[in-house]
Amino acid sequence: MRTASTIWGIILLALLLGLAACSSPDQQTDVPVKNPETGEVYTRRRVVVNDSLIRGRVLDRNDSVLVDTRAYFLLKLPRRPPLDTLALGELLGWDSTTVRRRIAEALPYPGARPSNSVQLRLTAAEVKRVRRDSAAWPMLSLLERQQRLYTTSAGAAVLGYRASEAQGFYRQARRYRRGRFYRLRNGGVESYYNGLLTGRHGYLHPLVDAKGKEHGTWAQDTTFRQGQDLHLTLDVKLQAYAEKLLGNRRGYLVALDPRTGEILAYVSAPVYDAATITAPDKAGVRAELLESEDMPLINRPAMLANPPGSVFKLVNAAVALQLGAITPATSFRCDQSLVSCVHHHPQAKTLTLGLKYSCNPYFYQTMRNLIDCVPDSLVQDTVAARHANLAQWRRYVRSFGLDSVLGVDVPREAPGFLPTPAYYDKARRTRNWTYRSIYSLSIGQGEINLTGLQMANMAAIIANRGWYYPPHLVRAVGNGGPLARFTEKHRTLIDSAHFAALVPGMVAVMQRGGTADASSLADVGITVAGKTGTVQNDEGDDHAAFVGFAPASNPKIAVAVYLENAGFGATAAAPCAVMVMEKYLRGYIAPKRKRWEKRIQNRARSGY
Image 1 (cartoon, one colour):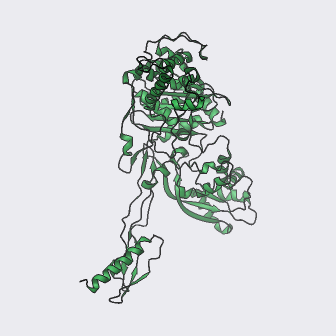
Image 2 (spheres, one colour; image 1 turned 90 degrees about the vertical axis):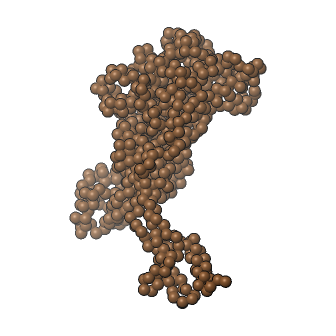
Image 3 (cartoon, helix red, strand yellow; image 1 turned 180 degrees about the vertical axis):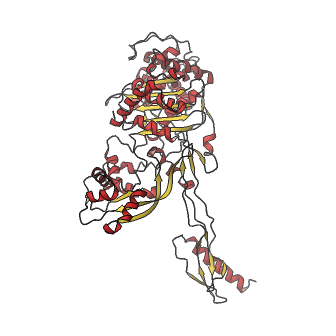
């Protein structure tokens, strides 16, 4: 038989569990609880174990702090009377141009009046000046805030932002014609790793009598947990350099270490300051980003999939070698009745020469062997054989991580696309389609779409002769390592010998007579293996592409570059890629290429 005290305990426990279920850190904690046996009244209390809750920092691969939670000051401008901008500039040490620019950047939309409660971020020196002259400026007020602050302007697409600090941007995005960016939130690693970056307060939940003596607990205590730091794979100096090469042009650059899958540089262009989305005084800048026809807020390497162009010839060649459709010694005539070839070159008597000259007819015939007449095909019917061979081609190509997400640690990664036989049956409205109707696959055009991450990973696979670790942006969480899936090695269905057969042709691309011979780094002792691509574009100038790795014999960096409407891959994309390689491997650019470097950076600033 239960005693009275036992029954009281059960009733009290049920009551407390019910109260605990709806408790929150902001809930009142002085709700009285009466003991029916003694009549004594207890008070629920919540005691914070550690009130200095800090979100984890974001650091680069060399432990430079990129994002941290820090205090900052806002200067709140008066609504009335009209602001004396000249006097304000004298107070802050700004010239008149700076005052006008800073206020314009802070306005919520172009043409808004400064009376709309503008707030400006100040440096420590500027705060000191305001406080010193506060008596003369009673209408100004300083506000102190805690927020994520960026120590670098680079890496906006990677660093991202906290959703709780981007509410102003979300509201602003809804008002704009390009408000769809609201649905394409790119919170970067701040969003992807939010649960690990966010700490947790510790709370005790004692029941206290009138004398302050504790009588058990009314809810389960929670332990304090500090937010964990993220150690990125990015080299922030390389990132900043790569952003200068792309600047206001549309496109991307992804550089990674093929040995580990660690992303060294990740550029989505046009670039913008990493703090822009959450900065309280950048509403005007955000308005320009939202309205821009260049769509800078799209995370291009992860979210946009495009036809890869001639760089895809590497994949088709590897599959053809594996299935016996060609050998390294296969020769094809440059028959322009099949497909035009923009390069004037000698006959490609080997695969190496086919890659060196990027001969379109060579790879047209390579792919035709794959689709129409793969040796030892067991299927006799022509239509059935064509379907079976395309399906087999797709199976081998998908082993490169294409037509599926790689699982990179960024939000909203796109899978790209590889066509299936069923796709062509529906698109052509017949099963009797022929190779001639799908030959654009042979030169990386038509229905093939790859993301920038997939392009860079493709280069890494060839560098590794057939395997890869999934590309990733975080090399360590706290004192641990990366997420477990980034340590799993993936292998393609292609034998390593066939990847090795591609490398001489990629090296030849960078040598005299190759499509990118002007981008050679032989003068500084670096042998680059690469492949150019010029992607046909029916709506404007062609797109420029390049993939490659260096050093060719012991690859330490693989790079993919894609520049929209930039023309030839050899003249637009390849120079950017090899300069990033040289910067990473040597730390500086040789004097021979300084003029070249300056020209590229000038074009990047202008956006052309």
